[in-house]
Length: 404
Image 1 (tube, rainbow, N blue to C red):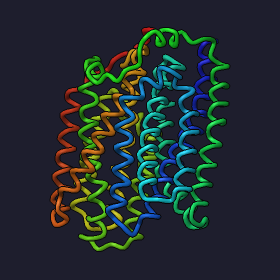
Image 2: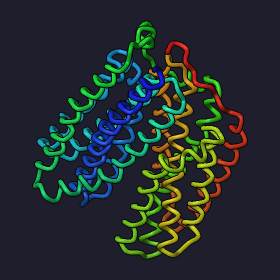
Image 3: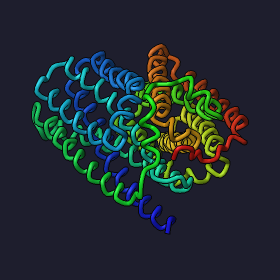
Image 4: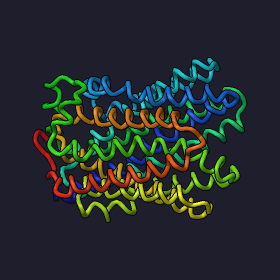
């Protein structure tokens, strides 16, 4: 009976996550693209806009535990949608550069808060590892769909709606997500007999705790390869356009196909391929994925045929999606339920900071040395993955259920 109930709860969790993440990631990416298109005449403005989103994500880390502790992850997600809708509407009315920057920073912050809430919510419905793995992998893929479809939606709204209308339409779409997710949570909770975890958590103060995160058994070994890979792959994202457009002199259409292959890999990887590497353990499998990313970057740097580069970027995207999914599964299992509200935001803060560091590092690389830089990034990522696998081959924590 318990397994049947858990199966029903797992399926409803799947529905909730798909709805919430598709709305959230689509809206965030579409808004960023719309802002960028309106500032396309000034490259420095676009760079500031992108940096603002990353900085917002970093700044949300210290405040996320307090918010999650006060109102809970299940109420946080609809609240985030309401706030995002308001922010986008304000940006459409203000129609100024700095309004876009402020809204971009706020969207980055609320997006990270929402992701932290989801990572706390997923394991709160079940202690069974196979359900956590399944829901988490689908969550990762659905989230990545927003990175693919969001820019297309933003471009469409920018093209068909003049001036502020596109942003207002986007704000309306995000507004619809709030009651939808709130309703889905009520349905989920109706299948939950009771929650023993919440009362325990309410007695504690929500606080951002990086030292406690890294004191958790096995976390440093598991997370370090991901963070180092995040720095390097963020550099790749910036260098890729110079490799394709400047060095190889490929058309914008070819560059679009290359990015599409990367995006498809991000969607397919977590759901289709994660299970194969998970057999080695979540942390070890994520490290294998890092080595695959490194191999893909080397393949990209040493090839000059468009179809080979597309295969390489698909491989990189798939492995990146796998690494993110397996590391997230590891964190959900390794962290005590009583500490998830404090430590999940700290984990996401580390990822955001690593991505921002990679973004800054890429700006220091001369466009004359793009291929050499990509080779160095590929070799470094492969070595990081191999070392991570050696460190994590026995790093398999059982599901922590204290307080659950």
